[in-house]
Length: 154
Image 1 (cartoon, rainbow, N blue to C red):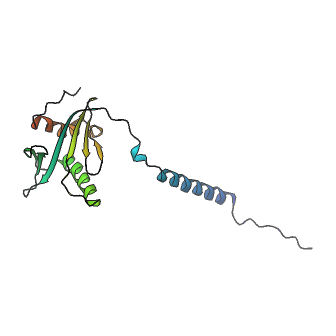
Image 2: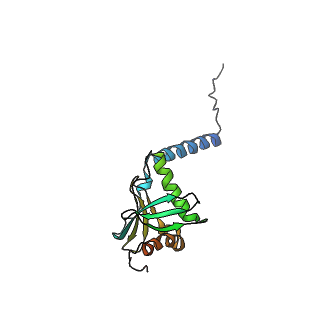
Image 3: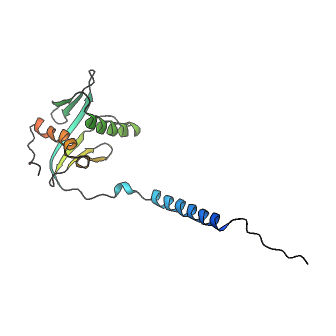
């Protein structure tokens, strides 16, 4: 008499690993299906807004130009890693979308003291305060350079 025994090809450990792997894959699919970039604190109202244009110069500097008047208000020279890095990221986003450098950037000083750099062409926002007061200060000084008086930061 032959007895057919059902053979289990997978050990219990292998079954647990497969179940864990499938759970991880489902979790990743769920996370990627949500747009987490829109999860953020609501912004305070703008206290001051400065529209700017940034132009690369042949000497390697970046001219900062008041968009409304067309006057150069400042220059970024040397390393200036934070400013250059921030602008490079925004410029690359415009390039990826096939946009030119025409529309202005907005430097927004908010009622709660935070500082935001907004790309009006792409809608991308950079909360400058999240990089620390020293880095945010490199942009905040543009309000004084443009003769726009912003409320003092607390």
